[in-house]
Image 1 (cartoon, rainbow, N blue to C red):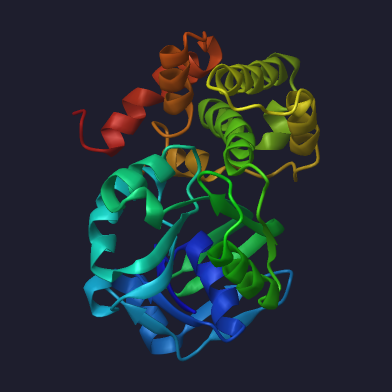
Image 2 (image 1 turned 135 degrees about the vertical axis):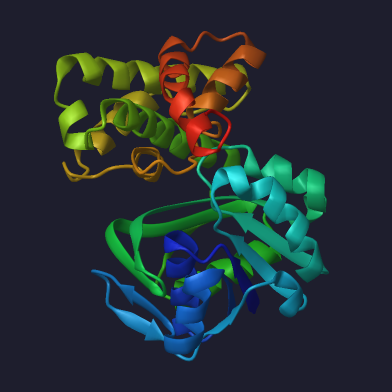
Length: 310
């Protein structure tokens, strides 16, 4: 398969690297120093599951340099999806499909509007990874897992073909019976830990252990659960308790990428995470007081990072 990794940072770089290591035809679309490092020295990945280097690696700055591909793994940040969708048209063939790996639940609809629903799957991934330096990615924890599926949840040959490619690459891969439930399950988890971590400026081990912030955590999870239910996404009844248990088993020093971006003064996924819970809750008539507090508290810094506030 000819696979383009659009957004070859820590997430796209890891999963694309594993596919390239397994012999798939992978093209990394990257920018600036990261692109030059990949072109000159290859893509280096450090991982508890085995370090490796893809060298030589095929990398390009512009999608137009790549030509049509079979699959696009979209690894950009959630707030970059609408602009990325415009650039994807140059590598989109009649049978090309896009797998979005963003946090949140908005990306499939945004891509479908720009590219046509027939070109889009629902998708998500689970991994803790970071950029060490240009061309160098470190997988720090969590079993790397990718999941995707047709938006109407029908079984398809293209999903199975991609699943087999990931299986060959040694990556845990799932085709859920309902991709929307799977996406909302992750959304519920990531929006809660991202927002509370960003407001408290503390790692997971701290805010899950203090009664007051643990209560916020439970309430944030419950709000997203209620929004999903009101929108017809039938999450498992015990998902809040299960997600809280999963959070309790994370490394105490862990932080979410949105939290790290906010603390570093970079644009973040605030609007796609806590902001989306508030927006979707308002549309469904579901109160979201904790997420509203998190979103409002973090919004001034977000606007500052985006140059929208002096």
